[in-house]
Image (cartoon, rainbow, N blue to C red; front, side):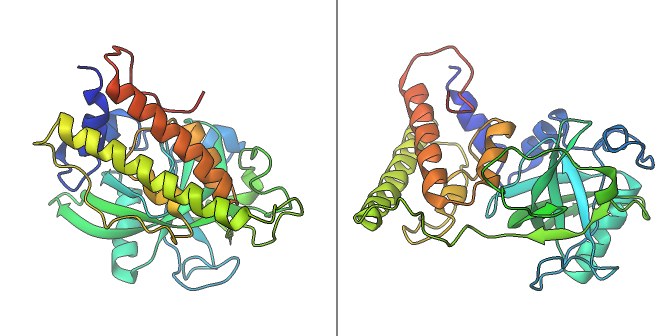
Length: 297
C-alpha cells in the first residue's frame, strides 16, 4: 500500500540508520560538487560545507576561528529539535566533523538546490557517532538546535521569502564555507490585532496540534506494528517550539519546511503543522495510490 511510504520515511529517520543513510544519500544530502572559490555565489555553492559553531550566546557567535559558523548546505531543511542522520565521506567534511566532535561545537545546515543556498538555517549538534570507518568516513546522528541567518537579519525575517546567499556573506578561507551567523528567536512583540481571548485560543490550538499528531502516530503504529518508529517524550503543550518538534521525522516538502523554519510566530507555525498532519491522516485513512502529501495545498 502506498500509504506505507509514510512509515518508510519515518523508520528511515530513526536510530536504525542503515536504511536512513541510503535514503538521504539518494536524496542528495551528500555534497557532490568539488569546492570552488565563490564566483559567483550560485556557481560555487553546490553542497558546500561546514565547520563548527559555538554553543555560547550572542548575535554572531560561531566557531573559535573569527567567530564564523561552518555552513553545510544540504538538500533538506533541519528544524530545531529534529534529528538528521548523515554519512560524511568527503575529506573536507571529515575534517569538519572531527573538529565538531573534538570541540563539542555545532555547525549550520542550510537548504540548497544544488546552486543557490538559502540564508536561513538551523545549527546542528552531533548527538552520536554511530560508526567511524577506517578510511575516515563517519555515520553520525545530529539534532537541530538554533535558527540563524547568514547576513543581516533586517526587519522582514519570517514575513517575506528569503533571497539566496550572496558571495560577500560567505568565507571560503577553508575547504568549506563559513559565515557570520545572526541567531534569532520568535518575535516576542504581541500583535496589535491580538484578541482578548487569544491566550485561550492558543491553548486550544496547541491541544489540537498534540491530539492530531497523536492520532497520526497511532494510525502509523496500527498500520505497521512491527516498525521501529521514532521514540520521543510526549509533546508538551507549553513547549515554545512545539510546531517544530511535532514535525520530527515526518515527510514534508523542503520548501514548505523552509517557510516553517523562517516563521517567527509559533501560532502561525502550528496552524500550518496541524493542516499538514491532518493531510497525512487523511492519506493514511484513504486507499489512495498517490504519494504521501508533503505540503499543505
